[in-house]
Structure formats: structure tokens, C-alpha cells
Image 1 (cartoon, one colour):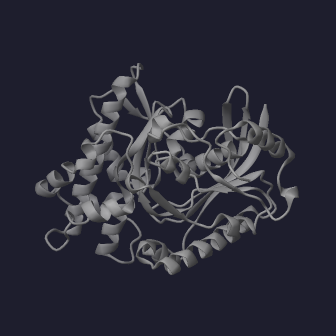
Image 2: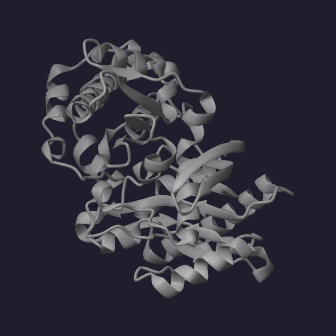
Length: 387
């Protein structure tokens, strides 16, 4: 058995801040069986200024976007350094912050220059997890099901309710289901610019479903497309925003209608998945910020009545930091030279070791156990990663 301590970083499209998860992984590289223990975790909220810059990043000129890419790299490095203090980690991994995601056009882009971030760190830093998979013809997202395969295999289904809701099936399948907090948070801000979100779904609970709007949402072509599939902010702005016309309907009614849309999409995704499982009860783990939306979760439970799908009780730490935890694990697998993105999830031509590894300022920061694993991998693997 071998143990590694790492830090995973996640910034999602809901813009609630930077999730940091300090974790210890224990496992056997030969059998590829792993466990984890979260040592510490925190969400560092973005300042209002940075939130707006990230929200509007897709509108920047090329030069302005490069500048923000470097600045966000500095922000990541300084925030990680401050969080860790004197804590030791063998490695650090970050998803970055997605600005563009257009796999059908062959590109995706996450903010946070890795070389810049690495200047703050004393351990190897892994980022850029999506690009190789897209180059191999895959969706490049969602990536979390690739880690669920190892760390959450006891759950039949894993659902993450972030800016976009996605589903994973024991790491054998995964895809984006529909937009979620990205839209609900945006509607809350339209109602009151001081609101960050619809806490507990209180606003949505006071609205009424608008049948015509719901029908238009439900008939979007994306939902009839077979997985693998993924969504980006561009798709939401082009397909969802025009339907949610606040000049015609009240914000509470639009929010209630969108909650209905989300829970219908989630139920259909679970029901379509459950026949592939032999168990009588389909244990389903729901995490991400949307899991704290009491109204949405109650509506989801109601939709699941009469099915064999059972929502598992879960602690707040797992709800908040599961994605950051898994990106730490994907970073570990990258450094060890083990596949961390699987074609059965993303639809790529083959499994891959994805991620760019950036050395710390001193070679003393690269643990000896990594040096041995890495150089053995470099000699033998056709999909090696530059370190």
C-alpha cells in the first residue's frame, strides 16, 4: 500500500468560488484499488470584481483573455499557497475555470496558466485535463465520473448539481444532463442583483410552472442526443436564455419552471440508467451546490417515487468538495502515469493519461516516489505527459 497527500482545486460555472480539498489517497498501484481521507477543505469565495471578470471572460479580446489567464494563474498560486500554509502535499491539481467548451469544434479552454501557478508552489502542479481527450475525439467533460470509478464505486449513480448537472454510472458512463445552478443563479440575480443564489429554492417555490416554456425546454434537441455529450455556457446562452424571457414572465415563475425542467431531466437520466443495473435498489449520490437547494431536492424526490432509485444521505463535506477531491485523484493518476480519462465516459478514441504537469521551482519539491513512477512510465507509455 502507498499513500499520497494532495490538493484538488475546482472552480465551476456557478461561480461560487474556488473549492480546495486537502486529501490523502491510499492505494495499491498494482491492483488499482484506492481509498481517500479528506484532511481539510474550504471554499474561497471570489471577490465581486473577480466574479464579474470570470462571468464575462468569453467576451474578452484575445489579448485581454491571455492577460486574465495569467492573472488567474497568479490568483490560483497565491490562494493555494495561503490555504496550505505549512501543510505538506505531494502534488496539487486544478481543473481551472472554463471559459469556452466546444468539443464539436475541437476546443475547450480553462483559465489558469500552469507555469504561472507553479511559481508559488513546492510540489508538482497538474492542470489542463480536457484538451487531450478532445484531441482524441472525446467530449472532454464531464471528467468527474472518471474518478468516481475508483473512489465512489459503492454508488450505483452519482449526480453532481453544479452550474451544469451531470451523471455518472460507476465510472462506466457519464454525461451532462442539463443546465442547473448556472441558470437558477442567473435568474436570482435578475430578480435582485444582491442575490448570489435562490437560497433553499425559496423564490422558485413561490412560482408556477409555465407550460409553454416547459415544453420548449423539454423539446431541446440536446436531450434526445445519445451520450457521450457535454454542455458549455455557450449552449446555455444560445438555447436556454432565449426561452426564459423575463419580459413575458415573472422571475419566480421562470425559476419554478426551470426547477421542474431540471428534475424531469434528472429523473429521466436515472430511469434510463437504472435498467443497466442488477440491484433492486439503485443507490444514488447527489452532490454539488444544487444538493443544498431544498425545494429542488424535494421535487426530485417526488419525481422518483415509484422507482427503485434511492437517494443516499450524504455529509456536507462530500456535497461541497467531491469535485475538487476527484480532480486531486485525476492529478495523482496523471503523475503516476495511469489512465485518468476513459473513452467509455467521454467517447474518445482511447483511454488517456491527461493533464499537464508543471514542476515546482525546486526539484526537491518532486517526491522521490513520483520520480521513480514517472520515469518508469515515460519509458513505457505511448501517451506520456510532459513533466
